[in-house]
Length: 411
Ligand code: NAD
Image (cartoon, rainbow, N blue to C red; front, side, top):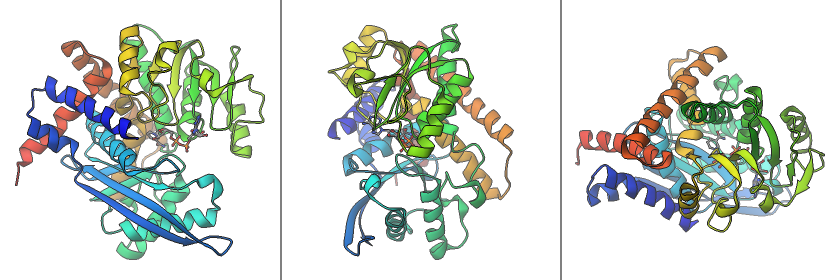
């Protein structure tokens, strides 16, 4: 995962140069405020003891409380969490939300754990972190392999120490103070990002052939929203299988299958293809919505998409990004394209702080405003500096964080 961190720092470095900031400022922007590593011990269902390592990296809070997801995955390590925390800082700044950036994770394989074991891991993690998280301090949210239920456990465990503070986590069930529209927000935001980009080149989603890698929270909601706006889903992949179908796949049928069987395999959605070859399928829009680093120097030259919209965090390595630039394949970058999730998390947090709840229409309208306004800012900078959308997004994010840091002063 060292490459992911290096790539992120490279993008920050490019933005720092364009903004003509000093090396000291660059060092300050790269270095996380705080990194916490914890050991989590639980009693497994078979009576044995299980131990897991958890991380929380709080990258920057100059614009507001630290904010970022929590993932459960075997690949989680300190470097990956550090890179993801940094991306959150730039993402909240690009969307102009009053938050900083953080990320957390537990190195575990959730597929081998029972609900009881997952609940214990979550509660012990909360015991270890409760005094460094909070609605004015650091606000976790769902990410890979974590969901509303995990957020509900964190909320409940935190309440035992600090009383009723629903804003301590976002992505909660609506029954516990979650926001309507949060669970689909990241995917809907991805569709809005694709539409904004296409609008900027006088095009629309109508009839566009889309392939999506990753069919969890983000992939399913992106597929639904894209199909709703006229796109044709011609390929879907998850951890279990990859399918291509030029006639189009009905996302509703695929989602119903995944709800029942927890994976795509076993459903005849089209031709089953090799997962590596899947990413090279001829299509109009490729949406990586799973892991980081899946588009890299060894496959970037063979990608046959006309446009890439990054729903996952860090799916394109720095080298692949350069290859796409050379090949004239535009990339709508993660720190803008998947910001819909943290944007509706912000709405959830605002509702929790006021204990006043919005309807779905208002959530959608406000989300649309943020996605439209942020794209306009990114695009204006890309035009002004004659750079890629990714570089422009980093210039926007780094510039805003630097402004806040400078105004606060060094103490
Ligand atoms: P999730 O756990 O709900 O789903 C992950 C999906 O990826 C599953 O379908 C899984 O089978 C698939 N997957 C895992 N490994 C794979 C592989 N090797 N090949 C193909 N598919 C694979 O996670 P999610 O919340 O949908 O997150 C997906 C991505 O979006 C992550 O990069 C996450 O950081 C990013 N993201 C999530 C949110 C959010 O609100 N959940 C917000 C912003 C960004």
